[in-house]
View 1 (cartoon, rainbow, N blue to C red):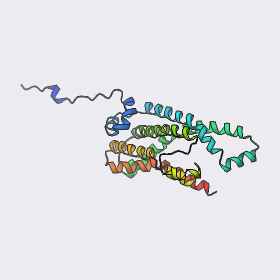
View 2: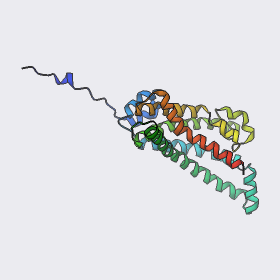
View 3: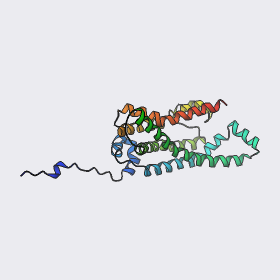
View 4: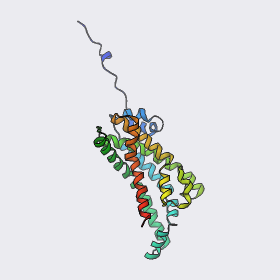
Length: 239
C-alpha cells in the first residue's frame, strides 16, 4: 500500500510573527512584499498608534511656527480687533486648537479615505475586500507622510518659519500658507506622491487588480482628501 509523505503535500506555513512592527520599516523599502503578507492578516492597532505618535510629535514641534504664520493672517487680526481679545490670548487659543485639532484631523483622514477606497473599489471597480484591510493599508501609507512631515522640522527651525515644503509650493511661499496656490502646489509634494503610490500598491494587492488600477484607486481615496482641501481653500477665499 502506498503512503503519502505529509511533508511533501503540506505547504509550509509562513511565519508572519511581528508583522505589525515589521511593517513600520518595510513600508519604506519593500511595500509590495509587506502588503502581500498583510493581505490576509490586516493590522490596525500598531500602525494607528505609530501614526498617532508621529503626527503628535510633528505638531508638537511645528505648532509654534504654524501659529506664528496664522497670526499674520488679516482675518485673524480682524478677529482680534472685533472680539477685543488680546493677541496673547488668541495665540494661546490657536496653539491648542492647532495642536489638538491637527493631530485629530490626521487620525480621522485615514478613516474617511478608506471609506472612499471601499466605495470605489467594491462598488465602482467591482472588487471584493474588507474595510479593515483597506484601513490597514491606508494607515501604513499615512506613516510615510507623517515621517515626511518630521523631515520638515529641521528646515522650519533653520528658517524659523512653517513655510518650507518639498513641493513646487516653495515658489509661492510668499503668498502664505492659506493661499490657494500654496495649498494646491503643496499637495504635489514628494511625500504626498510617495504615500499615494505606496497605498496604490497595497490596494492593488488586496484587491488583486493591476498596479495602475491600484494607483487610480489611491488617487480617488487618499488623493481625494488633498483635492477636497484645495477646493475648500478656494471656496473660502471667494468669501
